[in-house]
Image (cartoon, rainbow, N blue to C red):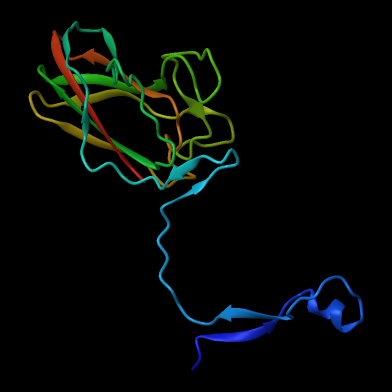
Length: 198
């Protein structure tokens, strides 16, 4: 079986009717075989190369929040060069908390600092709201708001948030932070880490 065959070009019917425009060969080569293709990204409307997003392989570990008082809240991540999480292209996120004092804490998804895409300023540290597939009705609701999660001391407590790209609660958020409130009854050091999944 030949790999290619001849096909008639779409403009050749005009030539057959006698409409002269330019001399063209009415036959074009048409590939007739399977060829593996690797998608490594695309070029956007501005001509910028955008690579394919892949899942994080390892957790990104934030700096330790030291001596967080009972009832006090902290924001993570807090690193100087990236104090927010960009979820563009990701559908789920694993978060991990390691407190030095076991007990309850509240975990909330909030707007990160400064800007969301090209919009600035934003309402930083406010609860993220939107159409939540976990909620009932059509009204907007908190995208992630866990008011009381019991954590074990001195180990990583790991949670997964989200579903697929279209229904994941935090999928596509460009400026995400987590507000963690220590309700353990005592002072606690709190470590935070995250891992994003496509």
